[in-house]
Amino acid sequence: MKLIIAIIIIAAFIIGVVNNSKFKKREAEVLEKARLTGWYDVPYYDEQVVVKSRSTLEKYDAARFFKENREKLDKAEMIIERKNFIEKSLRESLIIIEPKNFFEYVNKNYRKLKKHVDSGIIKSQAYRIEVKYITSAGNHLASKEIELNKGEIKRFIQEPSLLMTKGEYSKYIKEQNKIALDKKHHEYYERVNYIIDYVNDCKASLIKKEDCYELDNLMAQLFDRTINSIKKIKTLDSEEWDIIGNFIDRIKNNVEQIVNNNQKILDYYKSPDFLKVKDTCETLMSSQRDFNEYIEEKVQSISKFFGSGVTRNETVYNDVNNYFRPYKKTITPFTAEVSSTVYANAENHPLEYVIKYFYPNKKSYPEQIQKLYLLVEELETLKDAKQIIDNYKAEYQQYLGDVPSFIIENDEAGFYSRLGFANLEESALTVEYKFSYTSPGGYAQRSFTFSMDEVHISQLIAALENKLTYKEFAKEQRRLMTKKLRESIKIRDNYTCCNCHNSIQKEPNLLLEIDHIIPISKGGCTTEDNLQTLCWKCNRSKSDKIIY
Image (cartoon, rainbow, N blue to C red; front, side, top):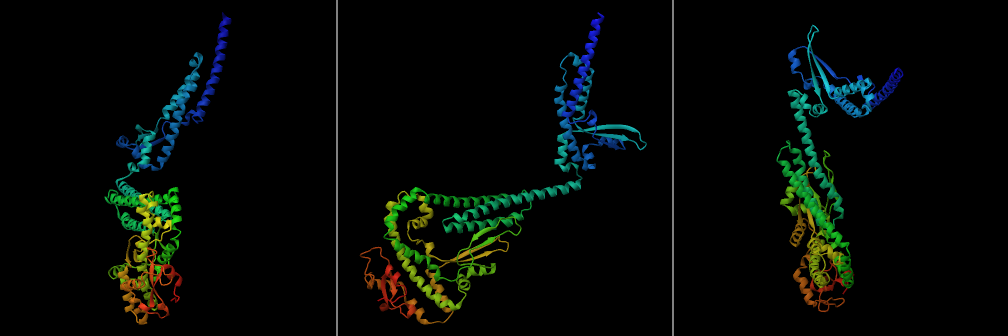
């Protein structure tokens, strides 16, 4: 019996030694997992405060502590983060220290380790401030504990107003409102910048110059209605935000519609359907190609009859405050950038200011007047040519049945130009003098155009003639070339070319022109005996030579 008892005692001793070793190992694992060097690494109280009255003790709270110790708020956040990690690690460690058998369960080291872990969990559950009431004599009469979790500490960080005095809070609100207002301003600036960037990127691919001008007009509206207006809004709840926002959206939609329509047209011109139409018309066009080229040359040369154009092609609107991106605006030929005063005067007296800005050199007036008289003749010729081209277009309609309607509606001139027809739209036969005003900051923009129709050309000729005296001969000769005289010469010559003898009887779509046999530049007069009817081919080859 004694032997059995001794064996049991020895076995229990050995098991105890083994279990002690196991628990020490488990304790080391728990401390390592929680990143602790010992069980006293986690204090119960993280801060201590001493007050000198009971009423102060009763009223003391976390807000007062951080008001008086604002520098400790970030530290408190770090402490609670660490404590949360320790608590989580210790709770997970309860599985590690769980007894595996009866002997481990009754082992005092288990109870000791369990006690350390439970104590660590309790201490790491909150950030704690101990507030002590100690009299001036040093007597500790009372104390209280303030506990804060991670969310409560975060709230103090995220809402600084909780720790402010009334004066500080008022200043803080003003600063926050200013920050919010600045943010709102920049949100709207970016909406405008998006449109500026979009238009700058897309303008180069537009196939219709009218679309470029329309984009410039939309951008002028955008600058005029938004830039200064955005800056002037001083409150977040102003109704102006919605008004400006709706306006920006409308401009954006209009811009995108122009670009999308353009892309739709470009896609069609790249399609097999258009190539098929073009191939068909290419064969038919061979007999008319020279005629179309001749008319196109006349159209392209029209601008040479007018005054001086601008020397630059574009200008840049840029925001001096760098809120907005630069916008490259198209500058058309014959555009004058003027001051607000000149702009107002030009609106009231356009012809006077056309002469001032586009015909500044009086020495060139005789040449310009002669060109303008010739321009009237050319416009008459082109009107006849337009009817002939329209006749050709009508003959081609049977081959154009499959052309989408949106192409003809949106780019009729471009479509026919791609087939080889001369472009004789009204816009191609009209030169416009444009006056434009842009404010110093580039935001307020206005412009108007003065179109040179036949009436205005006649007024321009008369105004230039009244400004100087020069050889009356040239003036009278050009003045005598009237529409009635032109028609009488054609009737006299039986609508037949005096050089090749082709006529409208042989070729219904024949373009006939009136030619000075001896050119005015060589002393010829505008009289019936010095005028003859030539077809466009013969007139083209004659130029300023004398051919009878």
